[in-house]
Amino acid sequence: MAVFENAVTCADGFRAGGVHVGVKTSNKEKKDIAMICSDLPCRVAGVFTTNKIKAAPVRYDMEIVETHKAQAVVINSGNANACTGPQGDEDVRTMAKTAASLLGVPENDVLVCSTGVIGQAMPMDRVVKGIKEVSLCLSENGGRHAAEAILTTDVYRKEMAKSVDLDGVTVTIGGMAKGSGMICPNMATMLCFLTTDAVIDGETLQKALNEAVALSFNQISVDGDMSTNDTCLILANGAAGNASIRYGSKAYQRFVAVLKDICFYLAKKIARDGEGASHLLEAKVIHAKSESDALLAAKTVVSSNLVKAAIFGKDANWGRIICAVGYAGVEIDPEKVDISLESYKGEICVAENGTGLVFDEILAEEILTEENISVIIDLKLGDAEGKAWGCDLTYDYVKINADYRT
Image 1 (cartoon, helix red, strand yellow):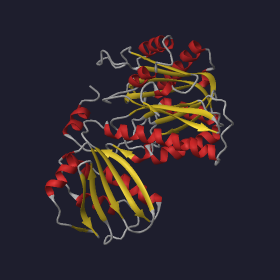
Image 2: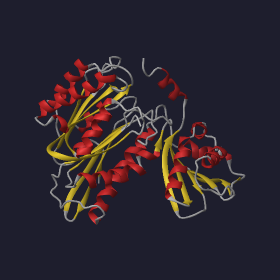
Image 3: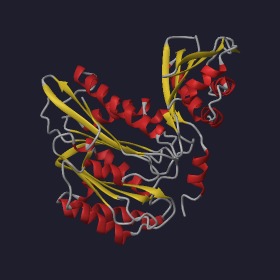
Image 4: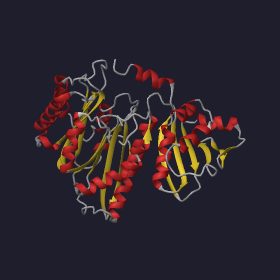
């Protein structure tokens, strides 16, 4: 069974909360300070933006993750604390030190994340006030409030938790994420926080997270822009008491399978919540020569602005799709490529062997009217496949981003 509320606190021993303090003064009500903490010390793993411009909290967290040891995360939305110079680094340390003193844990056991406007000084009086307030309302039922507090232009919360039996012991993994724009990870303005009560060492946890992220968050694109703040963290406190998960074991495989399920769900929610989006677009590449080719081709299709605009216009313009596959840099035979469109309204093949077909335009438009749309690209070169997720490109995306800072 999956849980879709208070997910980040579903694993034993975790508490969370979220409060409003007005980090971004233009938003009078939105929660903007969140905290997650474990009653026990945790193993930690993380994946971060590959943007060479990294926000102060990203640089700070990367050092902590190398120790594989943490116990809490404090997060603010509304300000990215990116490109803020030495003061930004000092503000991160202040946030960690404040949270640590309130929770009674070492300062270097507190991770810090920020999301919002780049290049503006942190309003530390309000941030510190918020950290103090949220520390007083942490609870097992506070996951929902934390999931609300990390959002920026997102329309809705993104949460999921699932349990798995590991040799007779129930282990739970939960997570929450935010992301709506500036999304093209290798890792996006995307934040994701995962918690588990599993017993697992830090290096094995890092390998598990890498596997899950590669096929989920790294396969989404809203607008092709990579943020300075992208962070995905997982904390494991061992409260379940299972035998320690060994890399490559059956227990590891089951654990990773559930972790992937959660990451897939959250990644698709981010793609669907793309700024101004009206459709979730899935690209599925089949019969590719290699998995890497399939994943790259799929990611290229969902990243194409021309494809995204066609989906918004309900236009079965398969030429834009095959064009994107062609410049993806993967091995293809142009005279073998088939393309189909699919949704709840049905499926229609629009191109075969690299050439367009005469197809029912009315049915194609009906298929593209649905909220969830799939593009299937058959390369006919091998047995590998891969998926990626994105959204359509709408007028509202431009409106939202035209005045995001102001």
